[in-house]
Amino acid sequence: AYEKLKDYKIQYDVKIMNSLENKTEDCAEVLNKYKNYNGIIVAGMSSEKYTNMLNALCDENTNVVQVQAINKSVDCLFVSKHNEETASSLAAEFLYNCLKDKKRKNILLFTGDKDSAIHSDAESAFKNACKEFGLSILKSIDMKDNKEYFSEIISDVFEKYIKETDGL
Image (tube, rainbow, N blue to C red):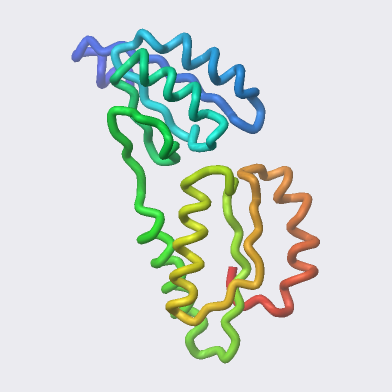
């Protein structure tokens, strides 16, 4: 990307923070480092634990935008993300079409971290769409956006629910 942007005299810096590995204080320190940049793009800080630090950043820099996983409580310049309702409805419709000839339509739902608005909104929209399509959700399982956690629970989840599950 740098080669494409250098003719426009744009300088940029990318910092990747992993909310599972980095403490909230680490994230605040990184945001503070970039507060005087001409523009800041934030992705993935949708949890409410980031609200105060992101609003403080937006108070100091009006050119803050959020992409994909957004925090609805932050007053930034703009956001860009997919529509959870549409995506969730399409997922439910797909499962319905796969199971429409079956008597039973039991679904096991796996979500990302429910503390994140993108995942909680998607879960809510998916549940509503399932009602419309006559799909039953056996259980909604929060994977916490953590593959280690998911690896720990998946065997127990399947052992408990797989016999009555028709779709994931």
